[in-house]
Amino acid sequence: MAQAPHNRAPEKLWKISEDRRSRLIIALDLHGSPDDKRLLLGRCLSLLDELRDLIVGVKIGLPLSVSIGFDGVSEIIERFGGELYMIADFKLSDIPEIIQVALEGFGRMGFDAAIAHLFQGGIGEVKRAIDLFGVVAMSHPQAQLLQQSFHRLLHEAEAAEVEGVVIGATRGDLIAEARRVLPRKTILSPGVIVQGASPAHALRMGGDFEIVGRAITMAENPIEAARMIVEAERDVLRA
Ligand code: BMP
Image (cartoon, rainbow, N blue to C red; front, side, top):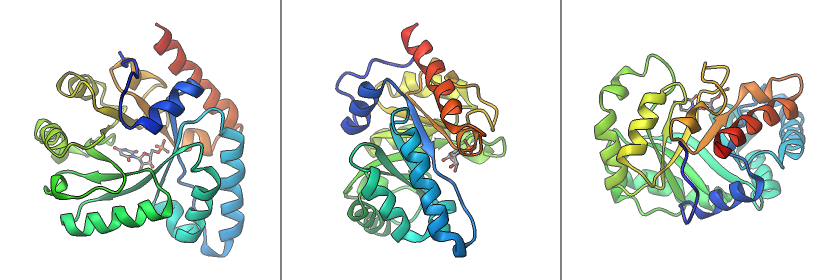
C-alpha cells in the first residue's frame, strides 16, 4: 500500500500531490513532424491547461523534444513549471561528468528532476543540480537483463542516494519488493492501461506515482481519462 507522504522527498512533488489529491504524472510524448512545431506546442499547452488540476507532474522525453525542440520544451516549463513537477526523461546512462552537465542544463531549463539509468555505475559521483530518479525495472516484457539485476539496481539506487526509482506498473511484484527494501524512496510507475497495468495497481503494490501517456494523450476525452485514473488512485489511498 502506498505510504503517507509525511516529509518525503522530493518535497515539491509530494506537496503538489497533497494539494491536488493526485498521484498522476503525465508522459507528454506527443510527437510529429518538425514543420508542425508551433501546432504541436499549442496542443501540449492546451492539454496541460485542461489537465492542470488533475496531474502533479509532466514527464518530457525524446519524442516531444525531437518534435518541438528544447526551446519548445522550455516554453512548456515556463508556463507550467511553477505549479507542476517537471521531469526530464532522457534515461541518461553516461559517464558521471556528462550526466552532471546534462543535469545542470536541465536545471537551467527549469526541470525539477531527471531520470537516469543506474546500471552503468557512477551515479553516486554526480553532483546533482536537480532531483534524480533511477531506473530499476522497466515495464516492457523484454527488459530481462535489467530484471536480472533488480536487487543490485535497488542497492545502487540506495547507495547513490537518488530521490526515487522508476519501476514499471506492470511489475507489481517488483514494486512491492522495492517498497520493502527502500521504504522511503519515491517510486514512479509507468505502463498503465496501454501497457497493461490497471490504474492504481502500482499504488496498491506500494508505488507512489503513476506515469501515464497514451491512455490520456490519445483519449477522445483526455480529462475524463485522467479523472478516471485519479479516482482509482484516490480509492486506493482512502482504503
Ligand atoms: P504510455 O502510458 O503511453 O505507455 O507511456 C509510458 C511512458 O513511460 C513513456 O514515456 C515511456 O518512455 C515511459 N516508460 C515506460 O513506459 N516504461 C518504463 O519502464 C520506463 C519508462 O520511462
